Amino acid sequence: MTRVAALDCGTNSLRLLVTDLVDGQQSDVHREMRVVRLGEGVDRTGSLAPQAIARTRDALVDYAATCGELGVERTRMVATSATRDAANRDDFHTMVLDVLGSEPEVISGDEEAALSFAGATRALDPADGPFLVMDIGGGSTELVLGTDAVTAALSVDVGCVRLTERHLRDDPPTTAQVAAAERDIDDALEQVRKVVPVEQARTAVGLAGSVTTVAALALALPAYNRDAIHLSRLSAGDVRRVSTDLLAMTHGVRAALPVMHPGRVDVIGAGALILRTLVDRLALSEVLVSEADILDGIAWSLDG
Image (tube, rainbow, N blue to C red; front, side):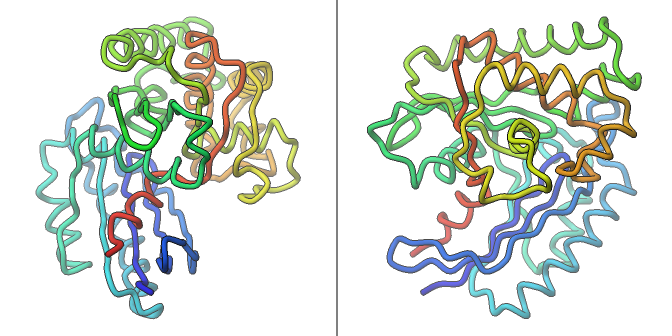
């Protein structure tokens, strides 16, 4: 048995998974997520804001203490879209090295896609493949095709934080703002279609907080429930209904939804819009929702 810690630092959140890996099985010990918004303003300024690095440091200090208390043997921390894009990412590296004793890996979009695919599909039946894994993050979205391994993938710069900051500035956003965001998503999908043969997919798998929150709302859960959400199926109609509702709500109404994480309130509209546009443009009848994602892929990369 090996006890490992996986840390995923994205544009919106910093997540920790402590899990035991034994004989090809995963037994989770601790999962935690903090919304640190590391990517605040990166799309506009090209740099990580000092206050964003400070928020991330505060969470990382707590995570390092948790790993010590739980007897973690191996640790891997990866950083994705916001850090890839930042001119001052060395400041972030220095901070992480100071707290963890090792530097984070700023992975490429292709590496991010491969880890997301590994985490999401490990427990799925290959007979249901090829899978199209759609990982909607804060700064980027990864679309990955494969069955036992990745055959094609592309990371595009549309994410819930990036599109909110770029377009959805009113509360609720205007029709024109939503249309502008949709154009960005459509442009990104044109890039995807040149690289990823999306029409070959038999099963579309949706990952990350925007997707799981839409699923929780579609299921009318009284509170966020990871077990109820994992491997649930979102119909295209439910995606359209929930996304339309979210984009019409004010911040206060969204915040009052029982499944809504406080750190997701201001960006969920954009995340739901990305999901809706993918469903519509790719003519998907449903999306298989997975709570297993890049964090699980990072953990399995530490096996052996």
